[in-house]
Image (tube, rainbow, N blue to C red; front, side, top):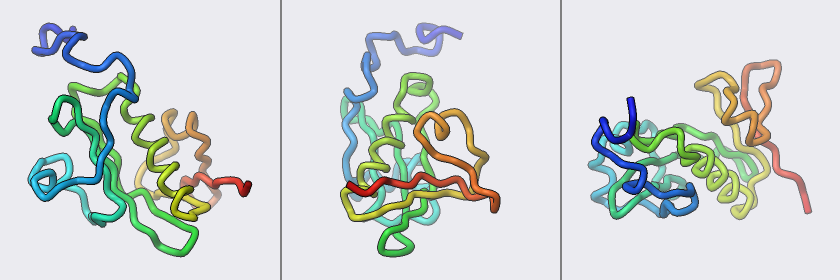
Length: 136
């Protein structure tokens, strides 16, 4: 199905994933189904992606130790998938972890798919998918 038949043309979306704005969510954002369905949600570690003021993606993570974070969820609206936004959100989460003194970002909910493998995550023997930052 083409973008035109789904109601969106290519010009209705950014050409590059970094054209999406990634922000801290406001109270209204938590009413949006993409964010409202996230469990658990830690406001401090949740970010939303917006295009033209419309929420089109988000991620939520939790700090579980001084240097460790868990990615609870990462989701992109169906009409904005396959444009690099998921990878951009994941890279943003990695940068937030690193800039907050974290050294590890991990998740347990899905197998290590190509998006995570491309972003230097690896699956350990215990089934945890993990990204480790490197010290300067």
